[in-house]
Image (cartoon, rainbow, N blue to C red; front, side, top):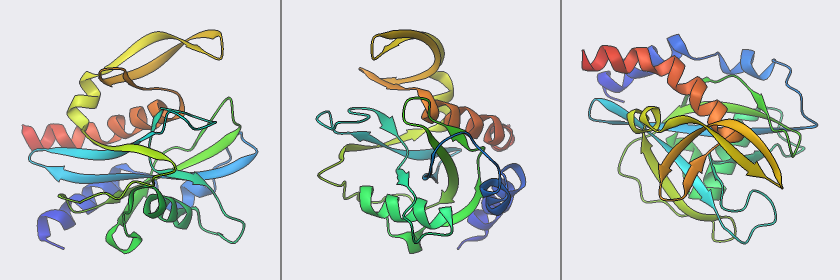
Length: 199
């Protein structure tokens, strides 16, 4: 790992939660799950990796989310869950991810999951292998573009209107719900680092 990459790891560790402390936090939700917030350097910015789920799935069809899912019974460490799910969903080998911290865990309202996000550094220029049964496409978005895409919007979910923080990232592509809360936490923690890099 280069010294620049090592200094980024140190800077991220300083603003992120410790993974073990984050997993000890109690969150409302019947089922524990974990997601991987994979970051890589893109000039003076960082990019993060999302999946867009297939439109024909029974749950969360067409939604944009971080790679992740529910914890398997034999997994004592939620970081293992996040890495396994990322490998299954987008073909990211777990040994090529350096976990540098965690974000605030968040509940999902409709499905009653307690979602634990872990932040990992990866190298740029990957070729993804999306899971044919789950993932429509892999999205690599700049944090600066996510920041600019933020708004408060009235949404309709299962016939119920509600207002939500969203990130509109393309034609018909909207990040909302638990994923939007995770993105907001990520930007709040990482923005000072990016401001320092571009100053």
